Image 1 (cartoon, rainbow, N blue to C red):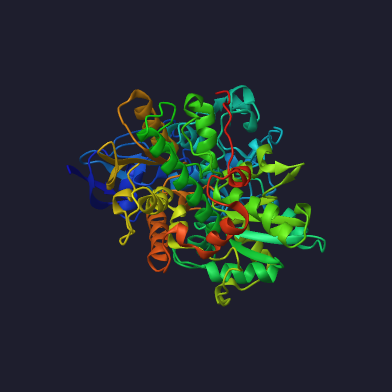
Image 2: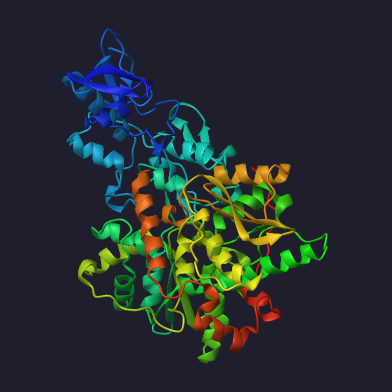
Length: 588
């Protein structure tokens, strides 16, 4: 790599040619404050406008100040980042931002995590010399995301995430001057757009202009209601991220502590969404087997590839962007919705309870799960299957509010019968995990071969789009070809290749968020740090590696559920409770 020699604050350093001043300084351990800069994983997605100007620096021989986030280094460049003049200018910029900003920090959803608040503290701003005018935009509420645009500082991070990274193209700058904000076209409500509710815009917003719909007080209300039987279900990705909020290393499995604290909060039953994941594989693997068998028998109406359906964000993405492909997704519900359906329609009835007596709260790494729970097809007579969905962050806040010392809690097991799962269910939390779990079962069901080595390592990785083959499973003499994508930009790339005929695949997995659910929009903020995502991925895989059962169809309670209630996968009863349909939606 070609490098250049530069000086920053009199210190000579060597930096890659064409790297930004901001990144060159970071690599040298020199701090330059910034607000609008955004780095996702190993790539820099930098807002072209460099709006905040907090990161301006002095460059030798130049009269003007330069934004370090977009100014490239060059040979012999001498840079000053910490002159008294620069500090005064940055302080003035922050004061101007604060002069127009709402002052309800104590009740703001981002309090304690707000980057503007942190910079104000860093610069010890106590008095604001300027008198600004606060805007009065209406708050845009949806089932998953709330837009409080009065707090928008026009950093344009959400726009970058939505347009460049997720390619949803929902958010952009509208209006001019004081009225300028980031909003959907024609300032529509977000629920009236093609937003997928992936929550990645929320994850990168430095202030509280975008935040999740918080359902924790509704959860507290249900827990305090003596007429309700409260049931918690916990997604696999939550258990390797929640600990970060309490000082644990990313990737640490805190399942047992979660069970304990939820019991202390008053949940009557604490179950594992992994059971729903095992159930999903039973249905999806059967659906894949049926489609392949029909294809081999000459059925020209069968649709391949089969597309896994566990992520509600990409489900909404395909409904808006590829309605002509809605016949390829598996009709199997997500683990969240399968689990809740079984709880309310089978488990509750076995106990002599009405579905209205049972209140199901899911704890998810994903904000789109809030939206999914609100979809009308996942309710019966106005009663939702999943009553509430709260994020990993919301659970962490609830634990802190409740005053429990999470770090020292002993580990408790999940309740049965929905607390037993296997490693195939745990890997639902990472990219490639759902299709690997399905492959473990399909491998034994399609050719009828006993699978000894369950690790399909060719399905793993962090490339945005991956194509892998399973030579042991053949269709017309060719190996089973699987496509995997994580991040909606990569999903678009993969679906376009399938549409054009460039790729011929038999099965696909798509997850909306980078890394899969471990990088979900409701997880503890990782600020684009790819190492945190990698550690969560390693934590998920370690759980799978250490389990005795690693195939979904070997779960004894899953077998019992089919024997007593469902008959067999894809039966009429299974289809009624465990399957769904999709709807073409307008693109805007």
